[in-house]
Length: 394
Image (tube, rainbow, N blue to C red):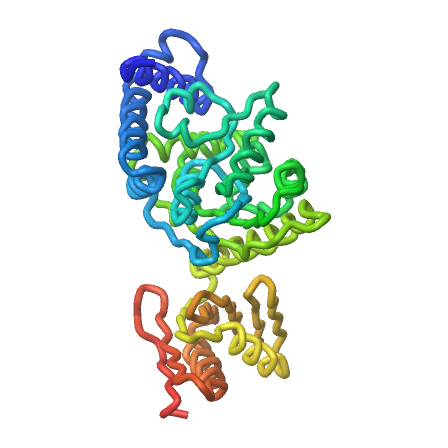
């Protein structure tokens, strides 16, 4: 297929997707109206493919994320094994998720990705060379090809859902794990030295696009989210997403690898959902909010101490697996989350109690910091400075 033919195929596939997303009749009039944006996106995809051909998957992924998202945060990239057979397993909220995962797995230049066979993908030559495409009738052949790649020491990324899943930044995504294919069992069975690595991705779907008037009227939910995703591709003002990838620990597959993958993914997705709810809580108009990021290499330890101590006079919960917790006071709510190198705090209270609660929480944390010189510096909504606690003040 020539470059011109590939551009035509990409344009046709894009046009069909736009017609479906906007609920238009598949006729020549709709095709003519949507041809310009379909062609524009086709040229962008060809540019991405040129970058992949010249610099590999990370080069194309980096450009795509810079173009179609606002930010990318990857936690745990250092956990990816540098060599040896690796089966990477991820959820699939769509849009730029594959690109974000490519960068998370950047240390593996031998990466191949399992994807559903579509004319759109076959028209992207360089990228298609790095895909294992599966159709309705060749799943056995795919398993053989995937296992051969793993047996040769390669890395493989697969999406067991086989379809678009909920974005953890928008709605609950953990229940979708029940619909995952058990293909991980077939892919991992009997391969010496194979490690399985779970990855969770979220924050690919724009809440601004979901709030667009015509999108809000679309039902069911999956169709509404598909229309919102299409707006993100077409219009720059809807590319306001903050994507996050959490990289789990690799493990050697045991006799019930499917259950193990589900359990590990459930914990990772729970952490993602919590991260995004942590941010969204700050938009609650019924209270005043204040946040703090406390630098420490032991965030979980200090969070547990704070929850345990404060629970004498308040209701506190800490989830060690998820790395988050809450403390409910009479006049305030405190949310805690353990991040890499920091303990994140979000405090909500009525205006007359906010400063008092900043002081109470901050001073307790500073007392616990016997090995670290903890500094708790609160920042209030709108960027105003709150109270600051240091060990010297205690």
